[in-house]
Length: 492
Image 1: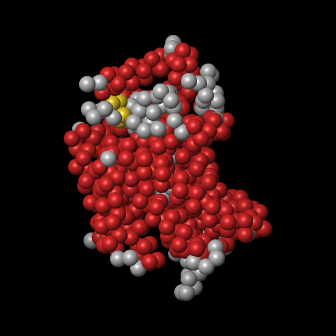
Image 2: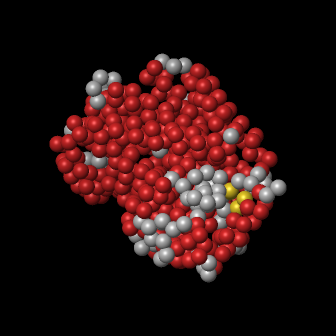
Image 3: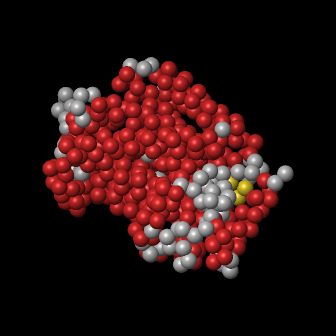
């Protein structure tokens, strides 16, 4: 019975993530938004990185957490197993050329990530607890003001609730317990208890608690992983030009992918590069907009640009490090004791073990996976919380937080083959209503983005200056009315 369900889910996933539905919609939406926004992800990246990572906050702005904490909360949810195992899977099946298509997905996805984060702040509301509430479940309904927008919002909300327990909880807990058992012989039930208790402590505190933890945890885990990867690349620096040549060559020939004729393996490289790229950075899924909506920011454009850097860090930095380490060490072509290609779940670990002295590579990948997976649990808990609140109201939030933490134990102690397939389906279904909404609302995004950046291209304006130069803008006036209503609702 379980095998039948899993096979059915995998068939549905194959259609959703296949070359005729979600992949062209994701790439097409990213390309369309890139054109409408004038290549914003390229020309404003430096200013966005300075604001989000170095300045970290907008003085005098309103919201629940800083811009940096909103960024790290979104990064916590995306920098996970997709950056380690997902990259290996893409390279194992699609060959080194798949990494090129992951880059393309990331670069175009930055425009999608900007747009959804912009809309998350632009149409956010304030709930009965005085916290900001935004994301596709809000902007699809409030931005597209008819039955169609409401339908998209309800669909996104339902799919998000299912997805948060799958890819954001059960599968992550399973990854942590399996790696600790394999590497350090820690019983899965011990991992389950510890992870559940720690998650419960953090989650009960809500977004402010999550923001503080991710702001401390995420930079450490990314730096640790990237430094280890850079060491391997420096040791193998002579192999990098050949690796890059292979990546670009195979992206259009597919010659390194196993089996099939030339055209088919090129399609495979594209399909797995795009699918694993989206799995890693979540651009177009709408999830990061939920975290962005909680940020203290002076204008939706500013937080949109900060959130956009999440995709850059996730894909262009972390995914690239993983991919280059696998290609330069030749791990994508390693074989096991049975003579078959090494399983993708072991490939990145083997690449780091080959590249680092002693057992350091194995330990770093294991510790990295544990930290990545736990941070993903924290990020996705907030996404699920906001979706549940949309459907059931504020009183449902605390029971959801407790339930979400308890489900972590189930993930740590249970085999989850069918859940992985279910998660892929739910992730794809989440993206569909959001991408449609981004296309419908693209005119508003482009118009209001141009209106702001005409006055503040370097993102250095103060709150008072923004109030002055945006005073006559209708979009700004509407947003400020909503912000004022939320501020007044928080007053005793």
